[in-house]
Length: 252
Image (cartoon, rainbow, N blue to C red; front, side, top):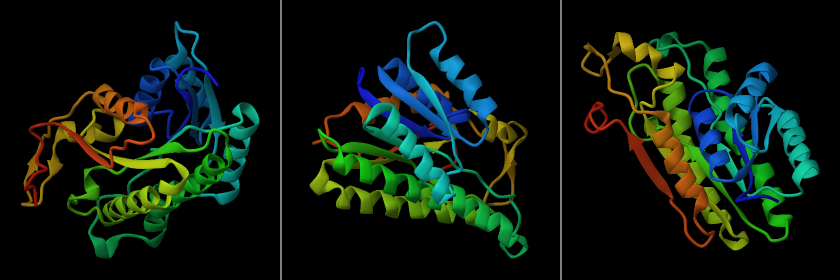
């Protein structure tokens, strides 16, 4: 085990996940980034480790598939013998259409990636963290500010992110006896490919369209690095990192 320990970031090949992975790597964590596309993961791992002697490993996995998740964590055990940090970041959204027009396939796809995926990865992480010596570890969930307040036409994404809050609290409670700390970071408008559409404006609850401010994803990474670096007897249960002037507080 080198540096801070062994960390897994799901959805670590792009966007916020890649920024978090880079921040953890720079802080000394030995890293595994997971996602569905091997070419994207390989490119991200090279970028994260560029110019440094960092260990950045990749694992192809579909977090909504129990067998795929089990295989990912078995690979981690074989490579490192332990897991000290899981960042449940993988997720996606559905088309922004009225609730009554949303297809069941789109609903299921979001629930599988955002909620079932976080549960399956957490379950495997608990199994390893409870058994390893020294025991314990930390899990950080990407909740999004939609864990608190929805955007218009976002029922699948919002429902899963509200559920992530419940999962975070349950895991924080169930992990106490095993020195497993669990917290959640709620992110507001980090400037990634996912927020590119905001440059042209995004629909607000009053029906108007406006361009929303964004923040550098590195600020999110810095927050996760802080959360991850705490001793296991301390925990950030929830943290919101957002663009100061974005319409969140009272946006509905």
